[in-house]
Length: 139
Image (tube, rainbow, N blue to C red; front, side, top):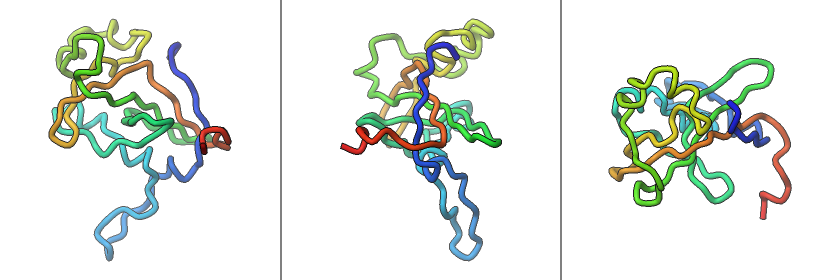
């Protein structure tokens, strides 16, 4: 993805966690991983709880496992703060390869629901990788 920016974050934020039958929930799941919503977007369901990074809310749309785990995410903005025309998932998919080749990413401009309110995913996406977070981001 040509427009993607990469950020190193605490590896705990990317953890998948594990299901605990006794507790009836996933334990140890990182906030970035927990925001994964691509399946929900495709089904027209509300997105999962977003994660915060550098003062913005983000939604994860792709997870890559392996030696170096990473998550791709888009900014979540209120529909009134989006400077374009939001589109539904079905409209974006109908564009075929043109949507996948968009410099701002496939999910850019995608209309989603979070907490009962219309939002839009804004690209380009960011890639979050395991690493030492920038010390300046702590302030």
